[in-house]
Length: 202
Image 1 (cartoon, rainbow, N blue to C red):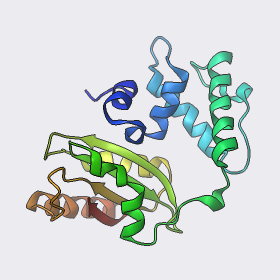
Image 2 (cartoon, helix red, strand yellow):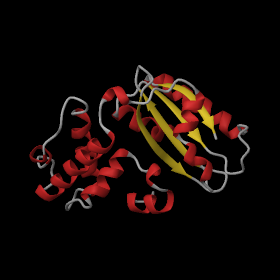
Image 3 (cartoon, helix red, strand yellow):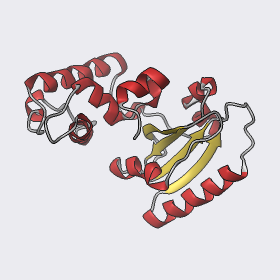
Image 4 (tube, helix red, strand yellow):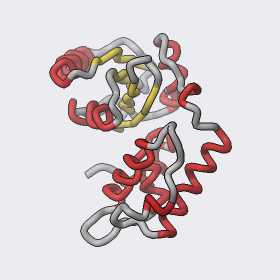
């Protein structure tokens, strides 16, 4: 069983959390028979469908089973705070043009003492539409299955993915296991129609 969002935050920082896990921390709890991660997933999907066309109201969020007035208000306040500080215009999305852009986006991985595997999600214009840490391993090992790579890509409608992982040793040469992993993910992507754009080691 993986770490819960709060545990991931404490161990690996905000960058390790998916969008859904961030929402889960905002709402805080679920209801009987429906955990807070499942509630957060439904809330996030509702939010994501409204970007960038307009805001979602707290009243609309209460239609999600497990979200009452207080949780809904917390979510819309968090969204509004982010909008005011950073803006939400789709034109401001980062466009990934090179490996240098990728490395800058995940520069924090250089400070990690364990291997982290991060997936960057791209749309047809090579705009970054999502980023998720899908595995945290030991000093030199992080096991990842193709379904973990592509699950968020499918949910966000991405057409391409870039996989990034760090080598805490500082040696960025790909290992034999890295090469086999890349081939496996590439083949899986071809089957489901999502391109593996690159696999970058930092």
